[in-house]
Length: 209
Image (cartoon, rainbow, N blue to C red; front, top):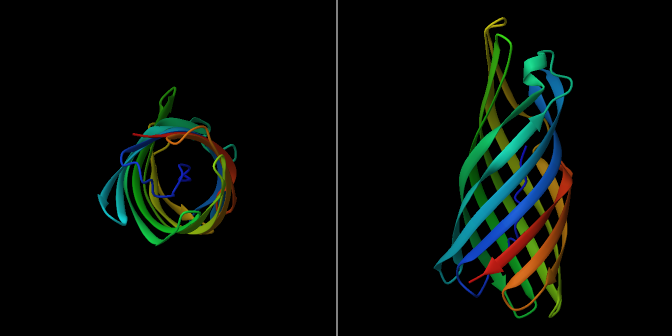
């Protein structure tokens, strides 16, 4: 139910901070019941080099989950946050082209309450991705990639209805297409579109230090 919207290219500058606004949809499966799930999120990613070809990241943010076809009204909108970590390995590097593989993990919590009904969502999510980045000009970059996403979560209902439901992603595979505008040698703005398991897009503001 998340996308990793920051620029996955490895920066030569060192420390890198990105702010991303995302809107995504994904089908989640609850014991055979498929629910259309939509997410709005504000994400912050802090990346720092660990080795010549290895970068680590800390990821956190706020998210709001909408599930209009959830049979429990109190569960149709929940909000909360997440915390995650990532490893980014530079497989191929040249002045105008990079290939990067990403491994990310995030833990999420969202909640809601309506009258006597309390809803708690808790889920783990992992992502393994492969991305290519082309620096078309000093001011423009393009990216193309694919990823596999794993979801394992629970929806706990207490109050009027007491129930524990498990859910996962119906389709684990996503494709990603992005364009990035470089404002100077440290700052950029990126737009990414996603298809497959994740459908939607995000806008990312990124700065290297």
